[in-house]
Image 1 (spheres, helix red, strand yellow):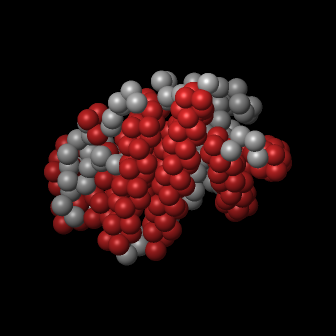
Image 2: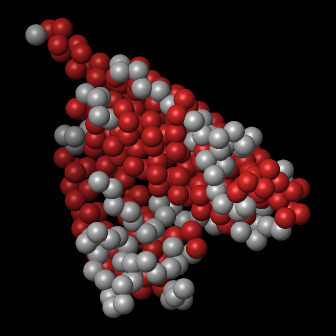
Length: 189
Length: 86
């Protein structure tokens, strides 16, 4: 089971109301390489991955939910004082018409989340390569959002999340090496 | 929603810092299970985390539920501010 902790993984601050930045950030909430996709991808793969990698997929998958909460907090804080005029100017009128100020699992262009964003191939090395690619794509996305953002407080949180993608990618690369070593052993015996 | 004392913010940040060490060591140990000094460091920080959890909870209320934290009267788990409201 999972146990919720009433605390963010890293402090989230925003300097000012800014619905335009919220629009970009929602990419990491409900986009193809976002935190929801990451959590669902790893926690789904873990049931059939070789035992040596189950712990890693469980722990990274769980951390992704903490990142999802950080993104949600950023979006919430950027949006909460926005007027309908500001929302319109930010290009979020379509979102507002359907969801008000609720968050929703869609990408920056408004395309709703779909399970086709994630893969499960039944081949451990293939799945781990997909995971490495997903982390690198998420890292790149964070960089593009940081480039678009002029909010120093927000960027502090985004830089933390960008660094986590690098760590996860590195751990997955180690997992690939662990599995390769296991496969090598089988050939010897 | 209850007002949080000034000291809460520093204590929460300290807990977040200790938890960062713990999450980093967790992922690292998942792929390096025989690194003895790192396991020692993990256990040492796990102990520090238990101490800090009590400090934060004395100002904020329960951090976890399902029996992982005690409750005051009245039930204060569902009381704000929630993390995104801080």
